Image 1: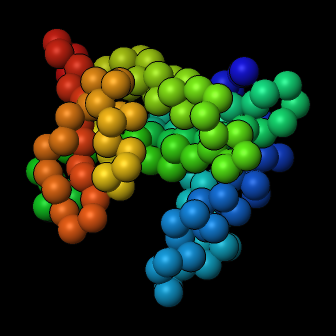
Image 2: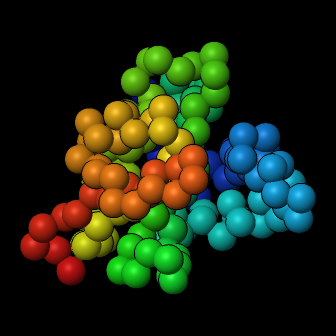
Amino acid sequence: MKISLLADCPEQAAQVAQWYFDEWAHKDPESTLDRVKQKVALSMNHSEIPIAFVVHIEDELAGAGEIKYRELPDYPGLNYWLDGIYVPVKLRGKGISTALIEYARQKAHEFALPSLNLRCEAHNVKLYEKHGFEVVYTEQHKSIMSCAFDGLK
């Protein structure tokens, strides 16, 4: 299993965008695949946020994730978000999401982020709790989780 920045394998961006559209974005009537592709393209950075990363098993694209900056009025102080952790159904249960989450935590440390936050469905809460995230808000069918990095600015 190898994790890389999406910027280092830009040919994978279309597949990542398709995953994101199929899994989440299609639920928004204003979303299009082209818009998702544009958002993914904005995350193809090497040393700044937003930053996207992908995992490969041998030569197969096996998952993706992103760290983004967002100022959301409902969540003051929660500005850095782990987003888009995705693993295709056929590859789930192999530790890929764990590797992506730990990679994101490592990147958060490298960027000296005060915390990393995420929004997830109830069935994923335990997964993120194993990686130091705690539920800080609950909204309808989603949990807002945060992982603080003590001593970092």
